[in-house]
Image 1 (tube, rainbow, N blue to C red):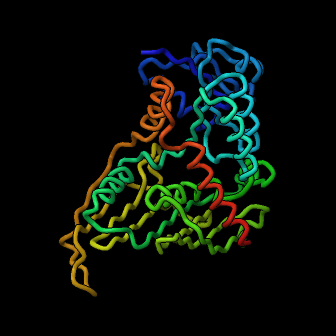
Image 2 (image 1 turned 180 degrees about the vertical axis):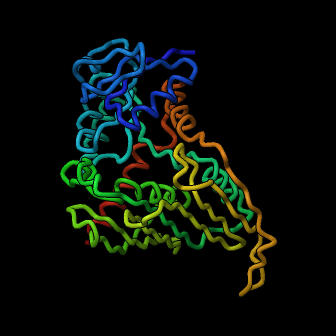
Image 3 (image 1 turned 90 degrees about the horizontal axis):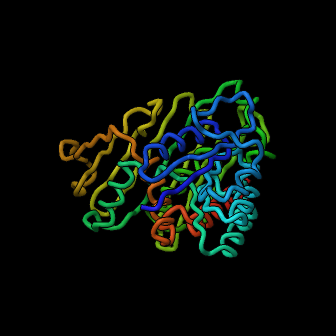
Length: 331
C-alpha cells in the first residue's frame, strides 16, 4: 500500500475532523498543518508550517486538505494543484461559479492529480441506503422530493466570517443548504428550472438567512428546498416520494447530535389512496456516522489506484454551483 503524506491548511472544526479521520486510516499520515491562528494548539507531534508556501514546496507531501474560509479556497486549490499536490477541498466549491471554473481549469492542466470536494452527506448511512433502494427500481421512479435543512444562530454569528458575503460568498444556502441541493442531484442527477425566494428578513445582513426554492428537471421531477438559519431548532428532513412508495429521512447523525437520531421510514408499496396504513411502514435507525471516513477513503483510493474521483468531482461541483447561482439570480 502506497503511503500518503497529507497536509492540512486551516485547522478549525473541519480541519480537526479531517485530521482525526486521516489518523485512523491505514497508510495515511498528516505530516504538517498550517493554521493562521498562532494560539491554536495543534496535535502533538505534528509539524506547524510557518507559511502556506512551506506546504506547497514540501516534496514529501502528496495531498492537501483545504479547510479554510470560503474566500481562500479557490486560490489555494489552484496553487496546490500547480505545486503538484492532490487536493481535497471542503465545500462550497468556491464562492461562485467563476471561482469553481478557475479550479476546473487548474485541474485540466494537471490531469495526473486528483481534486475532490467534501460533501459528506452523500456518504451517510441513510442516504446511501436510500440510493440503493431507489436504484433497485422496486419503488418506481421518483416523483418529487422535499428537503428542509435548518439551524439557529445567535448574536455571536456576527463575529464569524460566515456572516460576511465578501468572505463567505453567500449565507445559509452556501453554508448548509448546499448539502441538500447536492442530495437532490444525487437522486435526480440534474435540474433545469429554478424558482426561488431569497431573504434576510431577520438578521438583516448582506447574506440570506432563508431560501425557498423549487427545482424541476426535464423528466418533470420536482424538488422543494427550504434552507434556513431562523429555524430556532436544528432540523434535517428529506422526503422522497416515488411511484410505489416513499422514503423519508429525519435527523442526521453528528458528533453533537444536534439534529437528533438519523432515522428512515420506508413504505414499500403505495397503499390505497387517500389513506396510508402506518403499520406497513418500515423504520430503520442509523446510529453510526461513517461519512467522514467513507468520503476520504474514496479520495485516497482514487490517488492510490490512479482512477477518476467518482463522486464529489468537478462535474458534480459544476452542476451544484450552477443551481446555486440560479437560486441567487432569483433574488
